[in-house]
Image (spheres, rainbow, N blue to C red):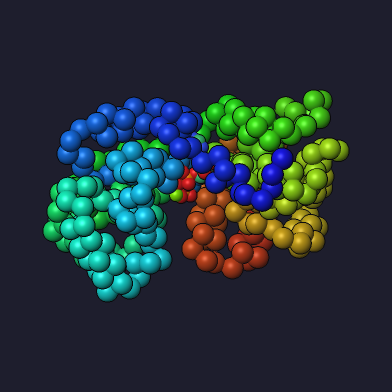
Amino acid sequence: MSLDTPWVEKYRPQAFDEIVSQSIAINNLKNFVKTTNLPHLILTGPAGTGKTSTALIIARSFLKKEQFDTNLLELNASDTVRIDFVRSTLKNFVNQTLIKNGSLKFVILDEADNIPGQVQQALRRIIEKTSNNIKFILLCNYINRIIDPIISRCAVFRFVSLPKEKIIERLKFIAGKEKLKIPSDDTGEFYDQLFFISGGDLRKAINALQMAVALDLLDNLDINEILKISGFLDNKTLEILIEALKNRNFTKSREIIESIEILDSRNFIRQILEILPSMNINTEKNAKLKTFIGEIDYRISQGADEQIQISALLAMIIKNIQS
Ligand SMILES: Nc1ncnc2c1ncn2[C@@H]1O[C@H](COP(=O)(O)OP(=O)(O)OP(=O)(O)O)[C@@H](O)[C@H]1O
Ligand SMILES: [Mg+2]
C-alpha cells in the first residue's frame, strides 16, 4: 500500500478504454483520432469526470514519448490573465514546429471557461491563424462561458457526472489494487458515503478514499470521521441540527453550525438538500425553498459571506417548517 503518490494520479486512465462511463464521448473520440484531419476539440462537463485525462490520452495517441515535452503545451486559465504571456508562449510553441516537419502539436487549455472574454477573442485569432498541425483541446465545466466563435471552430464532447455504481466500481478497483481491508459489515455504507462525498466527482471520491487510509480510519471504520475530514457534518451533528430545525430553534441551529471547526458551506448545502424531505415542509414551500437554497449556493460560489448566507438559509428553513 503506497501513500506517497496521490491515487488520482496513480490511477489516472492512460487509455480510452480505462475511462469509466462517458461512452458517447469516448466512442466518438476514438473515431475522431483515426481521422487524418483532427478538428480542435472542446471537452466540457462537471469536475472530476475525466476531461483532462481524456485530453492527455488524445494528445499522447498522436505523439511519441520523446515528443511529450516538445509537442504538448498545457496551459491553465490562470496563465491566461496576461494576454501577452499567452501570445508569447503560444508563439514560441508554434514556432518550434519547424524542428520536425509535419508532426502534430497539442495545446491543452484547462479551465477555458475561466478565461476572460477579451483574452478569448485574442485566442480565437490565434486559433484561426495557427497552422493545421497545431490542435487545441479546450477543457471547461461550463461551455456557455466560451465565446461562440471559438465553439464554432471546435468539435464539442460532453462529459457527464459519473453514476453511483461507476464511482463505486472504480473505488473498489483501487481498493483491490491497494489491498485495502474494509470491514465487510460496513462495506456498503462506506462506499455509499464516499459516493455522497464525491457528488459524482471521481477525483473527490478517490481523494476521500486515500485520506481515509492515510488517517487510519479503515480498521475501525469511522465513517463520521471520513465525513468530517471531507468537509461535511458528521451524522450525529446532522441529527442534532435536524432536531433544532424541526423545533424551529434558530439560536440552537446557529450554535451547532458555529461549533463546527471547518464548515465547507457548499458541502453543507448538499447535506441540507439531502435531509429536506425528512422535514415537515409542504410541497409548494419545498419547491420555493429549494430555489432559495440554490441562490444561496450561487452567492457563496461568487464569494458572498458564508456565515451570513448560512444563517439566512437556516432562518428560511425554519420559516417554512410547519408548526
Ligand atoms: N471517467 C473517468 N474514468 C476513470 N477515472 C476518472 C474518470 N474521471 C475522473 N477520473 C479520476 O479522477 C481524476 C481526475 O480526473 P480528470 O482530471 O480527468 O477530471 P476532469 O474532468 O479534468 O476534472 P476538472 O474539471 O476538475 O479538471 C483522474 O486522475 C482519475 O483518477
Ligand atoms: Mg481537468
